[in-house]
Image 1 (cartoon, rainbow, N blue to C red):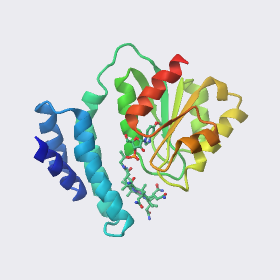
Image 2 (cartoon, rainbow, N blue to C red):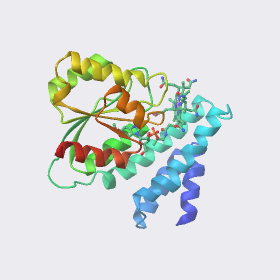
Image 3 (tube, rainbow, N blue to C red):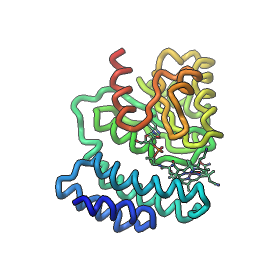
Length: 212
Ligand code: B1M
């Protein structure tokens, strides 16, 4: 089983979409822990992609293929990660903030929250502050989850929180922020209710916040 984790990481790095999806399914069929598939296979591969991208050893079209392979594998993981965890815990609106096209972490967080019993309304990527506030007004979720992967788009999270205040609805929704450059200090600085360094902690925080 362990050699398949390495194959997934390598397949992801080289953008072999079908192979990564098939190996993920095989591992799940063999009874592998989905978290192990994520950590030892998919995240391990994406880590190398990130380093190569930074060092200009990989370029956008190749990174996009790796991202597609990640999405294909996540489609296989979705039924396991989002298996009903009981009665609906509440509603979460998820969005990647304006100017940011990264969605893998957000999707993963959404899947895990769904597995914990939340109803997820996924607004997708590059969402304007105004649209996010309107969605909160309309759907009245218990939780708003914001994701940003770029240092240049992180400030949009603070902008959303300020816009919620201006609209008079800040106290009606708990805000969780996540994404690689986001930190606990940053979350506190912008007045978020919680910071999630990864998707499973995001789910834990969501469950804590609805009980608070
Ligand atoms: Co981009 N990119 N990218 N990229 N990309 C990064 C983020 C970067 C760190 C790469 C690097 O230089 N090493 C860098 C950002 C540098 C910075 O801001 N300081 C970068 C850059 C520069 C760019 C462009 C500007 C490149 C260019 O055009 N020159 C461009 C920007 C486009 C835009 O957004 N406007 C760009 C484009 C892209 C692609 C489109 C090619 C592609 C995205 C495809 C997609 O998402 N559909 C892409 C990718 C794939 C990456 C890397 C390689 C991988 C990101 C990823 O999916 N990781 C990334 C390098 C890296 O992060 N090491 C990089 C796996 C994912 C599971 O992790 O999203 O962090 P992550 O999610 C984690 C946690 O953060 C957390 O949970 C997950 C783990 O459980 N989490 C949440 C995230 N959101 C959460 C929300 C929650 C809870 C937890 O609740 C609300």
